[in-house]
Length: 333
Image (cartoon, rainbow, N blue to C red):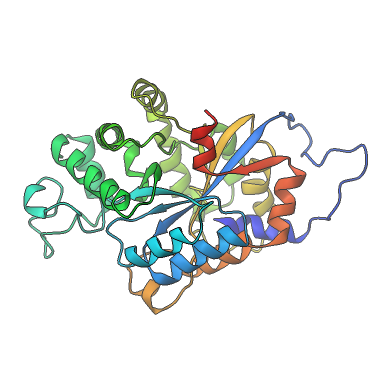
């Protein structure tokens, strides 16, 4: 996703002409814009953990979400303890992974008729169908989400926020489980998985067929926006105003710098007042990552390099976008 911004940054000058704004023409300038830069998949591999720590200490990553069932969980906990300013949340995994609670007690969550009956459904489409049709037991969902949060809390780390693998909590049934588990475990914030409308004008995606499918999926998610905000507020949880980077995640590198500018640079430059979350996936494309079954491989290397680049930091400063972590978001609200 951040590769798309990388191309646009390459052609930028390092200063703004006195008396002139660096904003794109026609973009209204708002006084207070904050951005949470959250790295997902903490705990997936040791290389991903190392990249997230690097992009925090030497870059702009302010928060991360830890996979309680990740293969490199213990390594991630050690890394988090060495970075006290890094906000750590729980990256709840309910699809394409292994439960933390006993699988025998989660018969509606695991793929009991598959070759791996003690694992979650690996297909997002199968998961989505069950979520939409009420195929998951609500108490089982809460039990598993609670188990994942408590596993992280048991290490002594403070869980500042929740999000989900593959943005699963956009589905109302999954959201309900996260809200209940958050209250049980004392977690105060949750990711808003909805991309702001300003980032979705169809004209930006004309002639970009490699992004059409993702664009359509994200547009569809807006049908859940009102319900998400109402339920989150009713539950007493805090949530940012929206999320960026979802459409671009893992997309092919483009040689068209105009595309880069229109997709991400323009989105960041025209963000309205508020607090927004930028989702990223830095990592090292090593043997462990290739064996992890993730579709995000080379893109993680590219994101890691960009997130530690001076150009990105300068771009955010010129746009007067202040980077904060989830801990600051929660404590300042």
